[in-house]
Length: 269
Length: 370
Image (cartoon, rainbow over all chains, first blue to last red; front, side, top):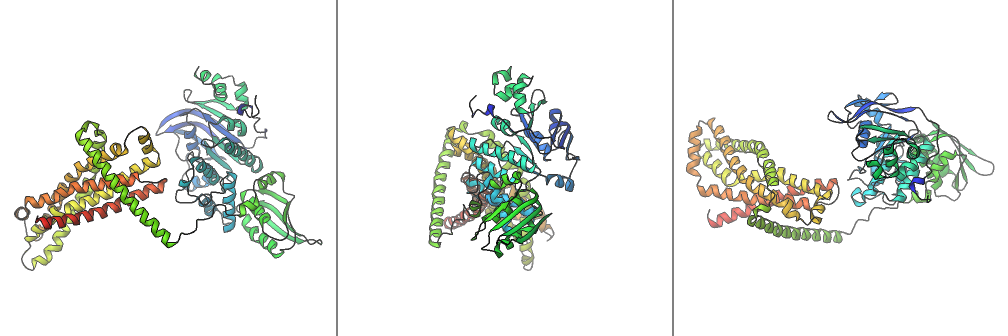
């Protein structure tokens, strides 16, 4: 295989598993009482870079919205270090939410603020650091995603991919213990995408941050994820769970191998 | 918690010993101390001994990077930092971070601002003229070939512009009739001329207030809604999609809205006139003037010409409000705030145009002796 073949990526080095941080139990995912996924169960350990994979319309983003407490599931439980986010409201929900950062698919930046102001906002709200420290941290986060030369730009003045990168910078502003990234690589060029993968690995390994990443991007899957679940619309649930490289090479399920090898004809069969 | 100890070695070096957890909550305590210690010894080389640092997140890295970047005669170096945290610090170029790579644009000279503002007004006028031409052509095409109009859109907009606006038009017109009646009846009672309040309300509602108030309400409700709806389509590139599919955004988006406004506004004006008169009549019962007497007086005072003078305005106001709402929507720039700006501009310019055109009507009616 060629050296730059994404399927040949060596991937992260195995690390000792941490304690269970997020536990999804008997989750029926969906909207307005109608489930699209039945009886979903999985756990995410502290420090893990965890991926939620699946085809379009398979319920990946729905599970993410349930996990961050934006949309209640039809039924089931999602526990963060033992605390159930499904039943939580008011201060309890706020307390859980402060532990994580979220990067939305479109970036979801505030249009009236510059990139620097967008990233500075959570630092201003949640810390009492000196002004220059806040600005420097915001600059550093933007530098991590290659946007330190655009700090004074408004979101409307930069491209969609750049908005997404700024969204990631804002999600990382407070170095939360858990970071949810919804399709972080889509719209990014391959170099930026690879840089982002490396940043994710570095933060996970050096700070023990936990990442939950919804993605379609196979090079990123193999380069940065420790473990994944693969959702299937027809099966209405998880059809595989484990190391993505191992699943690609050794899964007994042809659908799983086809998905991870980009083989549409085998996936259809 | 984070702690700092400052020590000067015999070889003239200043050592800053950092210990504990460097995170967003604990860095605050050592930030100023560390910077002061470096500033106090501008010529001495400084070593930041980070051996005792057991955790270092973004805030801690910011502190270390900021210390390295300090502009001074002797260098600042970091020693004994755990390799995992070193990797985080090495991601950044301290010199680059200390520069503002995207400085704020200098304020332009006043004369340039004036020129730009003038050019902007001129561009706005030109776009308005072009838009009027396009709308006229689209309406003419719709009149010649009605089957090309998207009637399903027209009925949908009719419901929103017309039926949904009935409660607010009723409320405002009723209160307007009542207020006019009260305000005029009290002084006229002194002269025993309360009955002429009916003349006043009839003429002012039918000729002026009915059409104008309805149009202002329409500008606030539907004009803003058109601008926001089309503006959002513009931001989401739906307008671009319409154009690249070979469709004309004016015929596709503007024509149905203007036709709907043309159909609904005159009906709303009739409704407003009626409810305004009812409001006045009910108020006048408290001045011992029965409803039947009030209505007979209105009938004798208001001619068909008065009614038509107001009714004709409603068609012009409909085109103005719907047209300006759609134009502002099509002019929307990028971003969510741009949609809000378009809606605001639609209401402001809609109301200004309504008042100006109403003034032109008043002068024209005076000259024509209507």
